[in-house]
Amino acid sequence: LRDKLVTTEQMNVISELSASISHEIRNPLTVTSGFLQLLNKSESITPQEKWYIELSLQELNRAEKIVSDFLAFGKPQSVNMVHCNFKDETEYVKNIITPYANLHKVSVELNFSNTLSKTYDKNQVQQCLLNLYKNAIEAMKDNGGILSIDVSSQDHNIIIKIKDTGIGMSNEEISRLGKPYYSTKHEGTGLGMLMVFSTINKLDGKIEVTSQVGKGTTFLITIPTP
Ligand code: ADP
Ligand code: MG
Image (cartoon, rainbow, N blue to C red):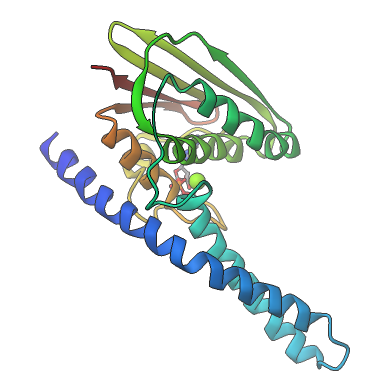
């Protein structure tokens, strides 16, 4: 347990640093990729030059993915603290992920019955939920499925359950979750879960993962309220 705690602390530092660096590189990324797209339309470039431009755009796209795992919402430096019950955040992220879910034949169900509130950073919680929903959908992209999100309360805890019917994970794979750059995906960043663990850690919460290969995965998040 002690090892795990130390690791989570380190993760916090890494993910916070990454978030601020991400913020700084987002603008140059956008500008560069805009100009490259313009160049790509030029009729005077050779096929080889076109190929170079397309490679550069691909690489920028990859950098953009890394940034997105940390910074889809707001700036890391700005404070977005609210005292709330996670309803707005779970709904908002559900709405923005729905087109992505539809694309992969995944239906999203949200069940909300939580009465407890907690003080948290709105943008960070949205980012955390986005990363979890996205992973769930990506685990179901071959055959479609159901992503169910359940927010309830028990004793003094807020309970968030995120369940998919996707490819699942072995115990070994579960144990590697959240390690920087651990990804089994062709175009994965391996940074999404790092951000998730860091956010839940800041809320003094814990995450339990249960998974069955070929059946699906459930993330059970327990967040204590004072
Ligand atoms: P990425 O999504 O870029 O690969 P993440 O840190 O978000 O990086 O996830 C790391 C890895 O954890 C994924 O590549 C995948 O193998 C595994 N994973 C995470 N969530 C799920 C899930 N819901 N079902 C199956 N595997 C998952
Ligand atoms: Mg991910």
